[in-house]
Length: 88
Image 1 (tube, one colour):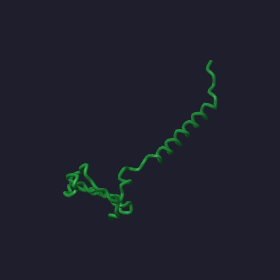
Image 2 (cartoon, helix red, strand yellow):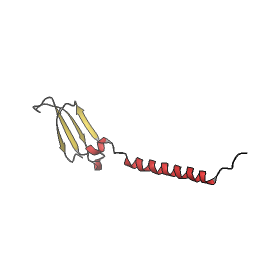
Image 3 (cartoon, one colour):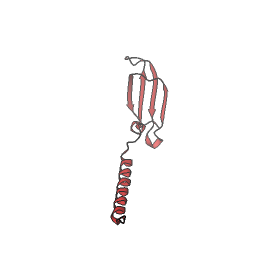
Image 4 (cartoon, helix red, strand yellow):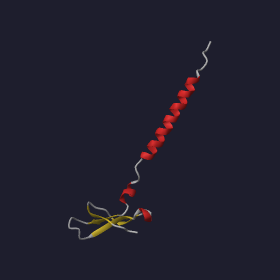
């Protein structure tokens, strides 16, 4: 003869489910913003060599009030200058 299920089991299942949902919500808020959000207002100028005389490309991110949009042209290289400006 089988034993009847105890009501305590369903309370444990509900408690576990609530704990998992709470954990998921907390972790959801802990996810870092996209990289571009940290770059808002940044301009990076890329040059052909260490003399920094011939510009070959640029990347710029507008400020959040302007949508933090990425604008770029040309090529990237290890030779660069980074500035922070209000570029709306």
